[in-house]
Length: 207
Image (cartoon, rainbow, N blue to C red; front, side):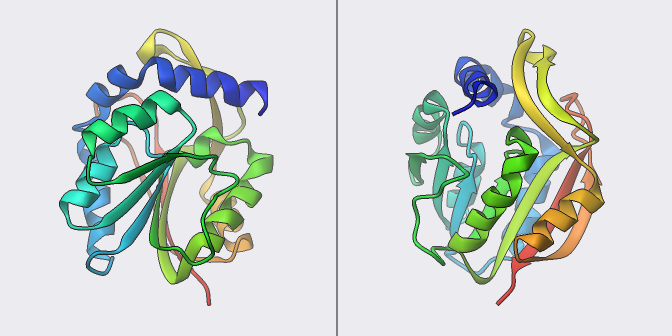
């Protein structure tokens, strides 16, 4: 594991409670989750890829979905188990998934790809494609912009996180190269959180 990833994981483990309190009621991301949920079959099995402190896993299980949340930040996983007791959680690297092919009906890849180096994004997206069932739905959200690297997050006391920024065309190309069909894209900004604009992509696994 490279130093940038270690620093990012350490940051998330350090700020887990603050992060949960500041994000648990964000309206825009919850609206997007509700919209995504409406596109899924009843009792769908969802991979929450980069689950953080479990807010989204709880929202999904409250709707009757079966959720497996994964993250490399151990304290995030510990916290998530308390927030969403009906979900299953595992410490796992998004780039190397320990699941069989075609394991999930849907993947919720919300604000997680942005913490992975761009050179590792193709491998990561191919792994998502592998574990998603044919015609399965995935949502991906990333920070809009250009460049990548460690950045200070002043919202949490100037801690450092690794961020990769994307344009719409760039994200669309990476998804298509990994075998997904992009069925919709939009740009959103969460009010009151100072996170900058996000690109949200809805896509399906071809085949």
